[in-house]
Image (cartoon, rainbow, N blue to C red; front, side, top):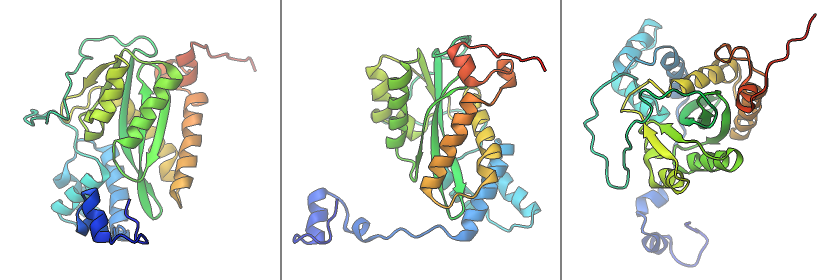
Length: 275
């Protein structure tokens, strides 16, 4: 928005746009290599021990010979968008702009495609940096309906993935998310309300129903991300796209009786050929 070559001084451009002068002159600093290494290991530990908070993760790292403070671990966890998963009372009061919707899946039997969709965001490490991946998943068939890769955790890339899934596959009866700011934003919930989709949200820190997306992240990390070191955002985007196509089309799931998510979603049966 700020044009440094424009005849109008930068200070006046900032005033006209309603942004602070300090933000105009701020140059983002790259994440130190040591922090990137720590974040990669924290991601692995969080995947294996999702109940671990900053203190436990600090202690696990110290057992590996890595000296780091709890506050620094907590700062890196916030940057990565991860937190310990456990049941705790939700005492926060949402602002009017970010309404928290009730949980709708208690006691509901999920037995067909497009009954319930779910979404989440995951941290994806690269060789020199990191990106975020959001996926829209059909809960019954585990099929990834759409995904997006972003360098920030703003709501925009989540909204893009949601709109793509709705355009390609119709709409679910219920859409379940956690209480992340991206999913409680008016931009995101507004799309669902316009489509008359029932919105369901897990309690703060709950694990119960986004467990299906968490299982997707485990597969993505161990079968794709940890085996590679993406050199660029475009490489990460392309490689993740190829893996998710494989995940939908060719990767059998024991929970689907050996079928792939595509076969389960479209109602196809696995054909077993005799040797």
